[in-house]
Length: 348
Ligand SMILES: NC(=O)C1=CN([C@@H]2O[C@H](COP(=O)(O)OP(=O)(O)OC[C@H]3O[C@@H](n4cnc5c(N)ncnc54)[C@H](OP(=O)(O)O)[C@@H]3O)[C@@H](O)[C@H]2O)C=CC1
Ligand SMILES: C[C@H]1O[C@H](OP(=O)(O)OP(=O)(O)OC[C@H]2O[C@@H](n3cnc4c(=O)[nH]c(N)nc43)[C@H](O)[C@@H]2O)[C@@H](O)[C@@H](O)C1=O
Image (cartoon, rainbow, N blue to C red; front, side, top):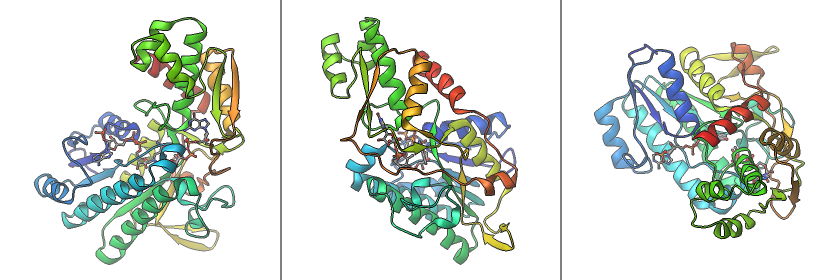
């Protein structure tokens, strides 16, 4: 990519898109184009076609998607498969028609089988059945990988797919029901601490409600009181967390340095580059995560595990040897990242 290449970031206000924007700006890229969801609905074929016709971007980061945590994925199953398929079909196809030089498609490590051997290598894709809670989202993401691969093979495009682990950072979604575990627990434990310190105005302001009674009854639905915070599931599943700005750095690194046609050597095997895992290669249990967040925030109450809520996949640790062999490694450790994002949350 040249510093004045026209680069379209789809989803530039989201967790990853905003970090990609910041990373590109810091590296001196000057011609970045963006549209909010309201300005351009990427599920709409006609408007996406018009946008590409008018703007003709050189490079595309596809970081727009319908995204959510385990409960959102499990409940809004139709929305997750429909919206994700539509967004990626439209953006990938128009990128082909308008001769985009390179596109980066963001998938997710939930594309791998539920009981995949750990850590999960790229080649485990499509070797067994998926985790049920996020199956529709995972199937959309697998279709995205195969769409990029198929366009590359048939039309000689240069579309690369990356599979990030669970991400967190500034501009994340902190909704108590629909978000991922890390932002959800930061907000729940922060609110429990405020309740325990009788900082009622701050609780009311955070939730945007009218009174502390309204706040208390709303928080009770999520198991948040001054004495304890509910953690979904058994606390035993393990997850790997990557700082969103490290994720963005890996995305820009791959766009700058890799092509679909590059192959990799593993032992004496030559492997085609269909998709690349992005992660840290380290995981923690949800119980350990909750305890670290509790300690960072300084809440003295209890953590109560609700096993009526789903655990989801018990483990999904990425094998990041391919990415590391290309010369990229993450920088921010989980404890440090939690401190930074908590600071961001309380000051936003
Ligand atoms: N967060 C995570 O832990 C993980 C994320 N990923 C993947 O990374 C990518 C980015 O995720 P993340 O940043 O967390 O997601 P966010 O929910 O933070 O951001 C999604 C972005 O997509 C935009 N968007 C959603 N629907 C549409 C639409 N119909 N038309 C136009 N824009 C739309 C939103 O626009 P607006 O802001 O204008 O509403 C928003 O900017 C996704 O592909 C996701 O699947 C993969 C693994 C883990
Ligand atoms: C990124 C990834 O994200 C999703 O998969 P997930 O990793 O299962 O998602 P999660 O972050 O929501 O949960 C991780 C674990 O944490 C537990 N947990 C405890 N307490 C809360 C809680 O309060 N909120 C949430 N959300 N989870 C909680 C929860 O029960 C689970 O065991 C998919 O969208 C998938 O498609 C995807 O790509």
